[in-house]
Image 1 (cartoon, rainbow, N blue to C red):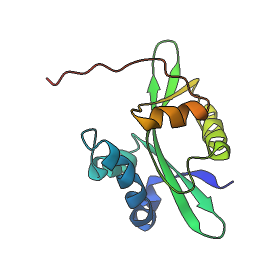
Image 2 (image 1 turned 30 degrees about the vertical axis):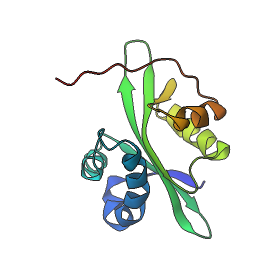
Image 3 (image 1 turned 45 degrees about the horizontal axis):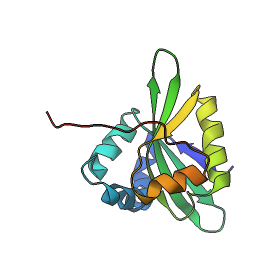
Image 4 (image 1 turned 135 degrees about the vertical axis):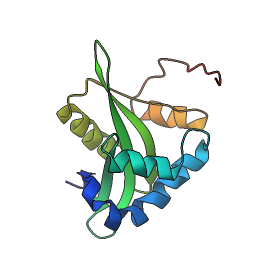
Amino acid sequence: MPLYQLHPSRLPETWPIVAPMLQRAIDLDPELNTIEQVEFSVRTGRTFLLVWEDPDKGITGAVTVDIIDYPRERVAHVNLMGGKGIVRPNVFDEAKNWMRLMGATTTQCWAKGTLVQMYEKMGMANTHQVMREKL
């Protein structure tokens, strides 16, 4: 299976490959987090790192996911997606299968601008608007 979860112990060898992919996603909304924060979250097991590996090209895509437990559902929250091989229906299907194996009942992500339409084409629905105020 080309999409798989990368164990944190493999970060030293793969981080130089996936970090630039994830950084491009961070650059779309740099207020949310930094690549160093993402690496720490993956290294400590708070965030899961999934990679898409093309047999001929190696790792071509990466996605980070947090599992959030709410009283009525377990949500797989997609934080970042980057790389050439990640935003395709078959990759989304494999990611959703992984999320189900992790016990998730729902998947979600934050999106704005043109990303909203991209995710809608992949079958996601725009269900909420996030309101924020800095404290």
